Image (cartoon, rainbow, N blue to C red):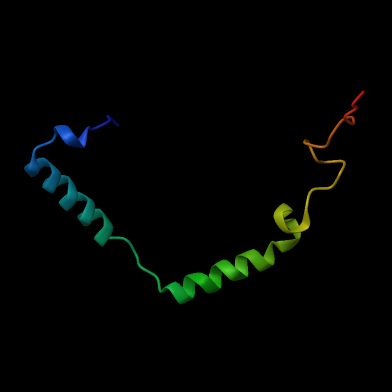
Length: 73
């Protein structure tokens, strides 16, 4: 897909792009925020045991674990 510099477009071209974008957006299925929040909460709670941000990384699997200490002489 080619890159379009919006500054180089005429007002008519900009309006046409906006209308085309709105036509795409109007076809999208919309959900209530309350329903989406419940689904996200359930998804997170089902996978909490696998989440490294909650559980942490085990020492043997941590790729960022220090290999050696720092020695100051």
